[in-house]
Image (cartoon, rainbow, N blue to C red; front, side, top):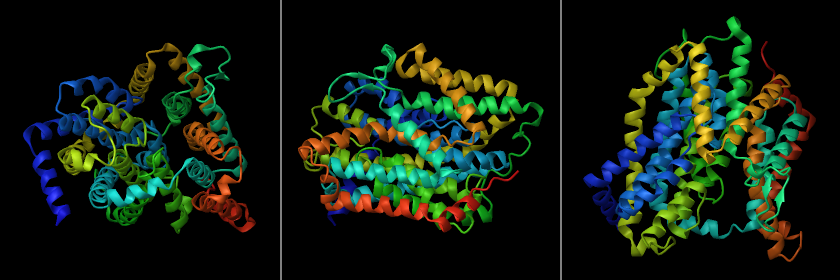
Length: 501
């Protein structure tokens, strides 16, 4: 009964004309910036943060939240159509989503992504409403040692995720970890591996590497093929999934939602880990793992659902503990402090209208997004009818604008071009880019939590195996390594990733 009363309060707040209008505005902005390559929710929310000074607290946070999960919807569009992941979690969407587009199923891929995201978003909202207080207790058990062990497990999972040889996948992860070390040391304040270049003191931005490795290199590969390039324009296909695609997608949507809700509550990249973990899970459970990476609907539906569920579940540590799960929720904490609202467990009691109004607005926002996105599927698919000689300069322009808008620095554009050339070479060497990006994202977080754990343990390295939860995660990682290393498993894995000529 108490939950029903809280939800009634939430609906009364979220259904006001003002809050509905700002929810719609946030969803529209989020979808737009998700569709535009290189422009993510973080710079957009950062630019709009001053607007919240003049908005009521509930309306401002509802708009910012709409931008966040709207970008998760829109980010899948460019990943599917032109192989440009707008954010880290969309890297996995490229693997099968773009292949579906190349196979003439672009409309179905976009519809699967939209419907899977809607289902995951609705379930995640219910999870927040019903289980936020008890689920927040799980986060209390995660200290620096546990986070480090969790990220080790995530990197081991990336080896399983990568197609091709294991040594290449390990090398790409290690390279990603090394790139993540570039910049200023958070503990000592000393610049590392910047080669005297001031622009590298803040580190290498994810968008720079992602746009280069996946965007620019894809353009070079397509231009190289010339007349032999696969033409997507004549094979758009139906805008909705067929019976077989639906049958293969819905179990992956359910599992992806469960993975996203489980990992999303963990501060520090839960949505990113969710999408990678979901893809790995689907491949493990599939009877035809060799179809993954070639346009398997489950390889798109699972990660997209996990991504959106993880994005919304990340509001649990924000609203209940005041802990930002990622850069976006950190900015939202800034918006709350602007209005003298102290994030943490007391928000549920001192500002119930804000807490429950925001939760209900997420459900309404997901409904708005699926209503907006499904009719627009045809519009996005029309991008495939644009001649490639016109499309690739437009992609370059959008990528360049997006990268430049991160720091308003021309150096980032040159870096993106350099990574584009490197990514093109990697594609010729059959090296996967996804493990590198995961290493780049998790590397700085792993290092920070590793050093924090040692500081708290006064230099005792056994802290990672004496803490039960940390030890369990490391044991799971070790088991995964052993399984992958077994000759029979390696042979089966090699057969699964045999590329068709």
